[in-house]
Length: 207
Image 1 (cartoon, rainbow, N blue to C red):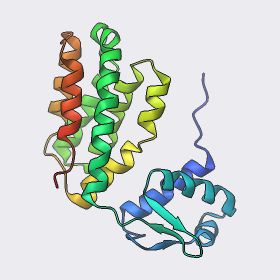
Image 2 (tube, rainbow, N blue to C red):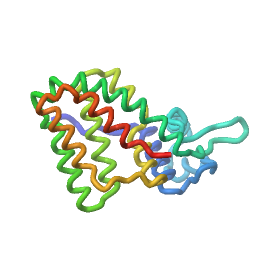
Image 3 (cartoon, rainbow, N blue to C red):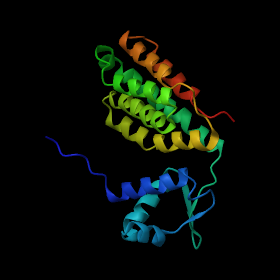
């Protein structure tokens, strides 16, 4: 039996900082102090710096000489820029994944079932988690590792969470749209790639 995947220390620290940003512990413009996090987590500052570099690539934080690291003052425009890029990647992924998912969509079905449960319970965190998991599985089904890496580098889960919590872009139902995508794969709809693209663009925050 394969051993469970253990997250690297920098990734755990990254998630800790992201959770703090999302929950308002660190507000836009506020400084993130490395040594304070090191003391809280009982780790050295080296993995913290690595985590912060990753977050800077995701544009969640910014650093300046002699000013340290601060949370970026994010706007709807920052969030909006992600969606056309993500839509293009997922459009390509859907096209590549169509033969595989047309033959067997079972990999996507548990996430749709989980989304129905999350919708019924009004569980926003579960809606985000299973929505992102659904799209990750779709992209992975493309069989293209470069495409998957590009998609992962966008920080989809982080930005989706911020979009909902900071801008109030929550939907009433996440499950039905995703079930429609599954059905389109199942019937081998020739327009599936465009359907996925429009679905992603439809999730973008409105300015």
